[in-house]
Image 1 (cartoon, helix red, strand yellow):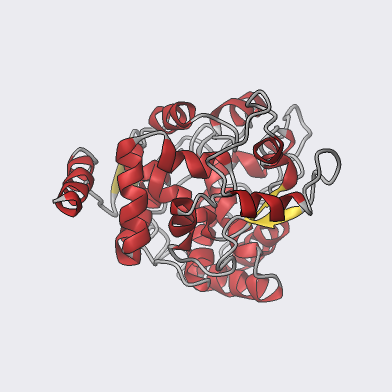
Image 2 (cartoon, helix red, strand yellow):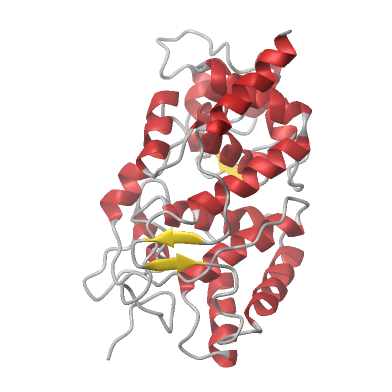
Length: 333
């Protein structure tokens, strides 16, 4: 009976989610996978090749490239604003609290853009490159595949305040994180499924230290973190110092995209507070965590649908935006 109710909750949540469709209507037009089939038929192979080489050099890069797409889309939509450097009146999002000393992989995007510009000058947006790179990074380390709707343009500005305020932070409460997702048109299923990206990658000591030393709990132990695991973490994450020390988000299979992230949460070994609250603060999200821990195929299916949905957040299309020649700066005419 309990298992039936769990499936019922998941189905009920999905019933209210918009259906997946690989052609997405925007205010100015459609995004669709075949957008560059005639104007740049080599695009997908170029992106896949450069990503494969980058991940072969450093497995962690898959998570870094996937994260760029998340952090871009949550600020003003999927418009490559994250890639802009300081200068020309632009204050880069790279300096925000959520991005500083954290986001990486920009050189790989530069390499892809240079290769694409050589093959198809002034044709492919940096925003679309980010979306393709996220998909290819996921597939290379064992995750699901999906068709990427294309046709985005690039922004001519950035938003430091948006980056500071709109991207979910490791120490946010569950309700704050869900609110930030809902602002983007994403729901609870999207939140739990997309959090599964933490099955790969690393987090810095500064991102979870408060859980180890009860800095937000009036000295009381954090009972949502398994204490033997917490003790291991303290060895490399001291009460002060070591802010940049790196830890696997998924200590079981940190280099493979799978569902062990959810199994860790069920064992109270979610590294970040934002991971563990998926189990402890909301009944519906708890049921999804259990479902994904039991059924990797279900997780992969939901993740693919949710990231396509995320990639459709406020894209610039038609005459809005531009095709940057260099992803780090706007075009000058």
